Length: 362
Image (cartoon, rainbow, N blue to C red; front, top):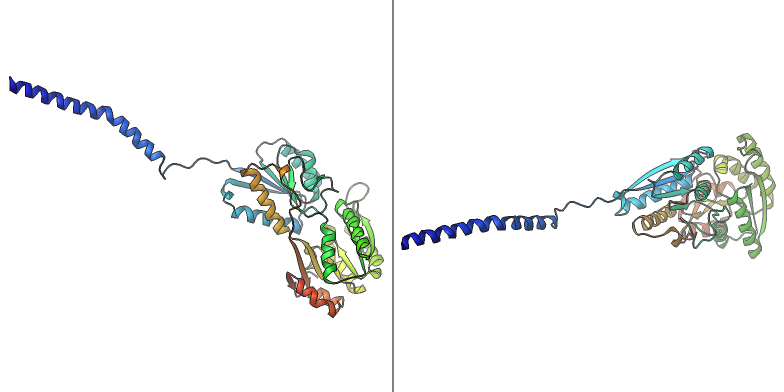
């Protein structure tokens, strides 16, 4: 009897042991799964890939430099792997640009637009209200109707620029080498060029400097550009009027001027007038290039893009007068062909961020 009872007790002990294993195993398995999901082997979360569309209306060195700076800064960001960029260049075809913007207005896959230049920025701001827009390489965004206030657009727009950048450039040159008179030729009808005339007038009045200026037409009456031989004749006439009357000549940013810079250089050499102007002309033959560094402005625009896409910033909260870095470049061969005064060359060279030995593009 006792032997039977011992066998029964042993049976129930084995039964309960087996049952407990089957009951507790799922819980142990679940706990094991839970631990594995919180370990370093947990699959990464799927993050959204943000689409940035970069737009320019033509091939122009300031836009190229700004875009390079923009891309460089984004690549250095931790968010680069979550960004996809498309570049669109209208190649001076404004009707193609209008068509592109119309297409953008119907799309929902673009998270941010980077606009380079006045034409692109102005057209985008007028038509696109549902996508954040960042602009740069715009000389006078208020006069161009892109913004109303440098501190806040009050809309989906922000950018990187410098208020009164032309007069600030001229003021820097004036602080290095005083001059009694300055001249320009400008494109009548260009918002940036006409705003520059106003800026330079104010600078000259304040500093007692004589200002001589003349204009050439921006476009024909039908809106098309003039043939290049006509443009060259217009430039020659304008330069021949201004240069004999001034100590120094300022060259504004313009693709028209860049393409026809030989006209400027010949005139500077003929009248022995030193030139200063936008940085893009330093290799072509101006003595001193003074102005915003478009590459750095592009980098700063990328900082704004990160803030908007990944930190929740609103474009209207980001001021547009952020572009503070100005660069001074000097070309020694350009100085030589206009007999630049020896007494002035030393302070000019001491102020330069970089010195070019020759004119690269005759």
